[in-house]
Image 1: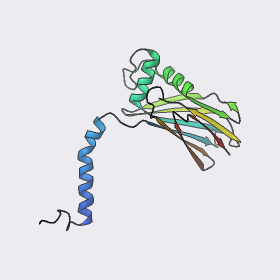
Image 2: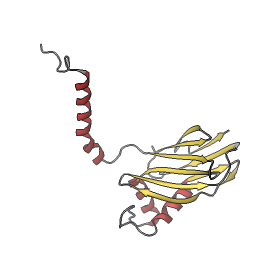
Image 3: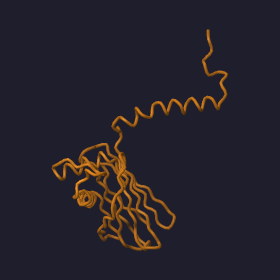
Image 4: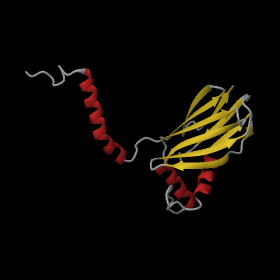
Length: 178
């Protein structure tokens, strides 16, 4: 009976083989559509501006799907083919699906802009309030109309303290207490 091939291999060689296998599989993984549905949002207080900066990281293809449904025509983000109404559509979508109340007062999120990569779109918003909240209520329903298994993660960062919330279709809102 032959022993397994890696019995006498040094650990460094084993690590190199794992990395090589990962690199060989990476093109196959990146070419396939993603099978998980998640977004990541950061709401961070900026002491310099005395306001909150909101950054949403969304899969570009999912955002394009939502914008296409809203516009009733195909919307592609980034590059020369992006329609002139794309920013208006992104802003409207986020205004409808990401709501924040500060001490029981609904906040008007101001759309700042977006950065589009082939796989990821980062959207920037902001609202002006101080760091001393008693409650921040957040409703995040991004992409629930398309993916029932969608999870939206959110980090609220104020004065170096981070509070993390996970939103699902069954639990689309959360109140964060100071």
